[in-house]
Length: 413
Image (cartoon, rainbow, N blue to C red; front, side, top):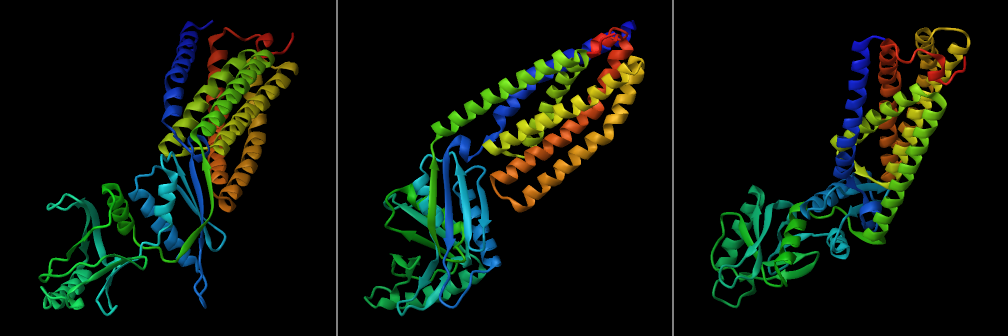
């Protein structure tokens, strides 16, 4: 027995166990949960065609971008927004306390227009630079403070200069009407020109939150096409947590069964495989964490499937090693030959699975893509742990001189 290598082997095993005990649970807890686990709402928006016009792919991209900007402005974490077909958009918002309010805000067109008394449009929402909720210093009521870009500021200055000529009169030309989605929300009079590109929307807000939400919509911009909500599915957090608890239980039971199987059939290599699986789990979960991945039920399915792939790679290797031992080779020679013979089989199996995952990612959307991503990460991690880490640890084990008998590898004689 070589004491130095035996000590090194013991240190490595203890280190792996320590990493597993200290890293896996915090990493899992830091992953953001998806709609199906955390609860929330899934909304399908249908783009409405105007007479004589067709919805274009470019309009759908713009619609997706505006909805994403709105969701970001509302402070909703990790939304999933993807197109479906040629004229639909699916929006998934997890962890909402008031999903109905969010749906109402998302579905609004938010077309802002400033008009003269004769109906002439002075400027529109696309000429806004910023919109922020605040309070009127005179009565502390909620208002929205608007700031226009250079083009909008110039147009507003010209319009207010003209309107100010009729100040202190009942002439309708003194007023500039503010419309949102075709509805009049404010019609203030103008006492003097406003050259600084600033305006205020006041009146009609029940509370500050309503003003803040409208300001968020205006910052996000108007929808490029009119939409309607054609489907809405609400998932309660209790249902989501129940699914998560069941997934955790299935994972624990499955992993325990795998660990016992490896130990019972392969003995010492089984111990090493279980240690490799710990590192595999840390790598996969850490990768998901750094990618800001959202954990969903399909994603969990992908993780568990990739665990099976990782175990399968170890089984292929260990069966090859056992074959070599039965043919009379020494333990050291059997391990080297077993890995060499198993390498191409493992690569071939994993590459074909990666191709399938790539197809799922390219053709799928939402949860299907999540499944493909977790499966891909798992396969990459399993190849590293099976081909590199397991091999290195087996060599270290053999070098220690403690387990050089065939019986430690599940082979009699």
